[in-house]
Image 1 (cartoon, rainbow, N blue to C red):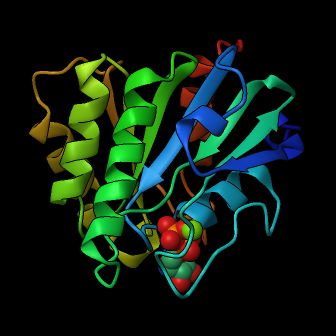
Image 2: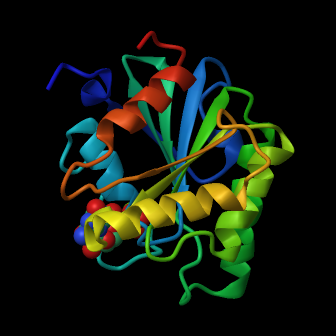
Length: 203
Ligand SMILES: Nc1nc2c(ncn2[C@@H]2O[C@H](COP(=O)(O)OP(=O)(O)O)[C@@H](O)[C@H]2O)c(=O)[nH]1
Ligand SMILES: [Mg+2]
């Protein structure tokens, strides 16, 4: 595999609140999804680090915004807290949601949102909420339908088509969809193309 810049990703910091983030300059690409959607696995697959983002069998524990630099600190991957974990108290949930919507609303360096959803259960209510927050400021969303190894090839194709169809009226550069498997490393090239575009790196 050719050397990809994401393999040099390194941890910058964790932030509990938007005001604790690094200065809002350069480029950011955020990864979001329900707890257990496969976000940590995808980030680890992308960066080649086995423990860059911690995978967990007890979802809902990561409440911090984690930032990683790619090439330099002007280009950052942002691991947003997972949402939708049933056992979390209502007030904590509301707090996370306020924090996530605030981040999506005010962060000027944010160029795109990678939204991870289990390919077997896409577009849950909170996923749609995230998508609408992004569209409120015309932020592009790339839906990453994870764990595609769990379905047959035709089921995977069907799922991609259906999610895309749900946002029929939006142009492809504002809403795109792909299947992804961290375990099989399927879909990495397609994801890299989107990330490079958002970071304004030549293909
Ligand atoms: N079969 C399969 N399982 C996956 C894949 N990605 C993640 N998982 C599993 O799904 C669970 C949640 O993954 P994790 O990356 O921790 O999800 P997160 O909560 O969104 O960070 C773990 O048990 C992973 O091993 C995948 O591509 N294929
Ligand atoms: Mg995780």
